[in-house]
Image (cartoon, rainbow, N blue to C red):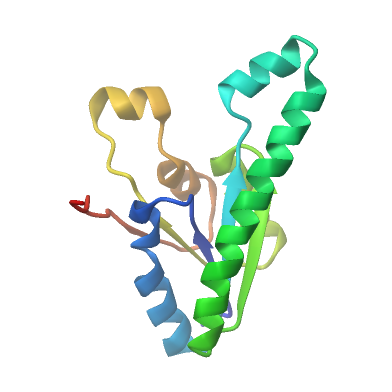
Length: 151
């Protein structure tokens, strides 16, 4: 039923709470997992680029992409050790649009994404990647509202 599951991560412990759900589904259906993290240009970098500091922006984006890929590769290795075929992909772009485009272009059968549970003004200001994905794809989406962990 689900050959390829896209597991959306952002490096946070909240997003990682989606991992057990996605791995359970993958194991049940003998699915492969695609771990994806979208690296977005931070506002300060976009402003620097507009002011002619493209090389600084390019260097920072390479650093962010490398950090993201390293993080995803480590998670993917742990999942492979559990017998789950796993791929790790870092993409640059706007998270909501990029996830929908990637899923459509790569024959994804299920998208797994955690919500971050922003309320009121936080949601207005930051929006919701999960909400965008749900509204802009015909691919089934599973979401979990993660719980804040106390440190």
